Image (cartoon, rainbow, N blue to C red; front, side, top):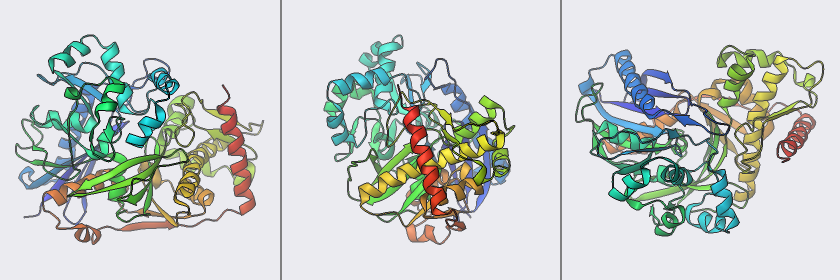
Length: 497
């Protein structure tokens, strides 16, 4: 009997579930939109119950669409919006606060305080990360300081912190399993990259009790089994967990040192596999765990831009110049490259990520003229997404001492041919797009399939992996240089405080 994998991808703006066969055939895909809440300027939250309910309903829809008997499901995997932080009561699984999303900037003051105490180098040496509100550790500290009863629950051993993978795993096993994997733990500011364990010095610095944190495991093992989920039978192994960007690196089959990918999700994330080497960045990038499978741990360099697909959502919801995200390509194509002049849009609505790490930066549009219309704004938004990634590629080349020869692309916005061509023109590097764009879900499914013995090795997986399209640079060099110059000037203006 064919064995199937249910891959859960819980993201910033929704949950997607794929049902995959052992041949990496996608039998079904279902999605549920779960939009963040913005209670104050700079704050971004989720309702944890909506995440859970949305996950259950999406699993149910995917299985119904796949038309497979639930008894044929051999494994469940989870990939998630990494740094986003949940807190709940360990006794009854009831949340104690809203979920603080990775984009949230409410802990900027705490980060600045720690920087003023000269703690950034200490933190970076242990974690590979920078002191920024992006990561989980300061979010946990905020919950302890600001949520009624949180400290008391922590003292009693009743408070549980976790990234979304831990929250879902705990719920899916009726509170019996409290674990995370190394890729997610490496995004908390609390795990030492060398020991792959919670670090006492870091816990002390951020004031987070170890008792509130899950056990750190590998990215491919049986963590527990489903229990009382209703949408899935009891006893199915949950056996593949990775943070979404590491999952995409695995889903793109970037298995060798130097392999790289860009994921176009709510944000954009560029990762390059650095093998077994923990490679510090001198150019504003992050060092992170890629995954641990078996006894082998691989690492990666990462650059992140906070506004990727979220920029297109802003065009839709904020400006109203498109009715759906899918319209942006057609409208942007109406604007000719030569018409753009000095127009540049920097989507720094939630600050700037790598390589700038400027929490105070704000979004900006420069070069507006009387002739600027919505098609020009739409194209400038796509160019802004691509320019952010181009900056990351430049930083990565400096860290690696060489340009990347090619990049694999994935995520929802990678289906936009115009955006991919703009990216290729700016980067002057070949882009390869796979047939399955949901490589975050795919990567976690691969990890689960290896743990569940659906595949014996990566070689078995490679046989089923397929390419969709290759992009090559077309833009003249002088035009590329002009666009980069306009972008650099716009970034300087958005960082003027």
